[in-house]
Image (cartoon, one colour):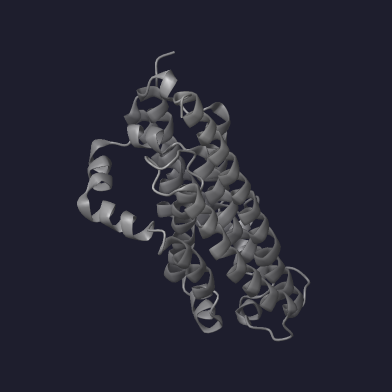
Length: 300
């Protein structure tokens, strides 16, 4: 079967986006939950073009350079999970319930980003990028920024700091009432999550991977305790730190403290389980790389 020209793919993406925009603009009260609550071109294009470029990369690279099917499935599932929390009715609940907001950020910062990192599809995605985008990715400023943000002394601190920063009560109130800030919050959580987990879950040994397996395990331990502390504070507190959800209007029959307690438990328990899963992945990849090295050098 002849592959679809890239221009046709772009046309389909833009046409579908225009339809979604028009429907959400003129019929917002009649949409099912799987339709966007508030359609945003930037989020829509970032997700759909990622999938288009990924498909193009698969066509560009020879089959022997494709990741295993299970890794491709992880990558696609992770990207689609971002779409679900950002461009469906889930976003409506995230703006009106604290615990739903924490679930959305758990997907952006943990589960969805974890799946994208497990996909190890960076090479495929890069192969599918148009040349202007490749030049931006390869530019010195972008590479220098990536090197700083993924430095082992910076990455775990930034991962935890963003989680705490966006939950500062006064700031959180402002963000939830300001659409541009709300979008910036979501973007930073998603990008930081992908960058952190891609660093930790790299299946290769060092080099070419940036970090040794020991350093990756240490980074996981560094991020785990602060998350547990924050989750425990919010889930056990008797003070409502986020009255903004009363201002926005809770859509479920739930008290403010129950809403906050459930949100704290989401930070506490699923966040800890994600770190536990990451530690298992690091240990397994370490052992696999050791076995690979032994087979490559039997005398050693």
